[in-house]
Amino acid sequence: MKDRKPDAPLESIGEWDDDVLRRYPAEKKAQDFRDYEHASPGVREFYRLNHTRQTYAFVQEKRARFLPRQQRKMGVWQAVEFLNTLVDQSDPDTELSQIEHLLQTAEAIRRDGHPRWFILTGLMHDLGKILCLFGEPQWAVVGDTFPLGCQFSADIVFAEFFAENPDAQHPVYQTKYGVYAPGGGLENVCMSWGHDEYLYHVVRDFLPAEGLAMIRYHSFYAAHRHGAYDYLMNAEDRSLLRWVRAFNPYDLYTKSSQRPDIAALTPYYQELIAEFFPDEIAW
Image (cartoon, rainbow, N blue to C red; front, side):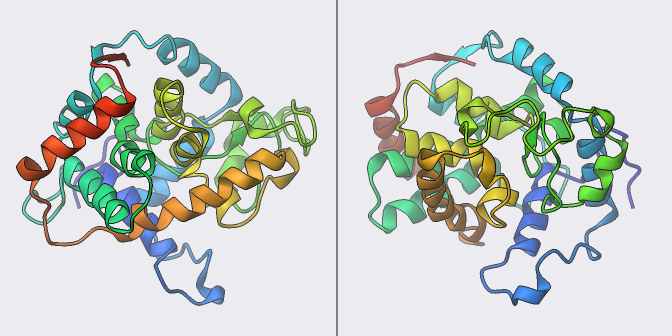
């Protein structure tokens, strides 16, 4: 096995995607859920780092750094091409590139006749992974997401690692509601930092609420798969989570060995992007 750097426990960020698919395959018996003993050492170490370092204060620092969106200006298709430069340490002959995963997701949504904003959301949903290209470690880019500032749910994958998180000793953060009001809505909740949260803030002025929910919550498995944190949600959140659940199978189950024709699809998606976005946005 290759030596692993402390902040890069996965062989590639795709290893996290593969582990999510292992946990949530298209068909699985109820008794098999939450079986993590077969997770690779890299995935376990990834979640140890993620769960011990994602604190309320850490997320506030990342929001202050990245949400002014001063990294660079580029169009959405430029961001797709930029993400595709992310070096995957796994075998390039057997792994899909970043752009191929995005196109496979979007094309599956398109084939099923969903609205154009839904198709575009499928194309864009992982663009926040460009945080890796801005120097962020894997554990601060991918991973199941969860609220900070309140009690950690036992439904979060590898929840036992939260014991070493400084917030676990905070007298307010480890109460049920923490710093939040009951039913106050997820819009007011500080979510763990990563590609979902970052992209949500980058594109929140351009997509409908349903698409934004898909982007912000598609890795919030504790909520949309296990029903956790319902006590923080309002009626709008519960309605939007139905869209997240509708989107999730396209993210998880559309990878195939048949590669999309990027050149042939590019004009369609450039036109679709132009329908919703200006030529450049701030990242």
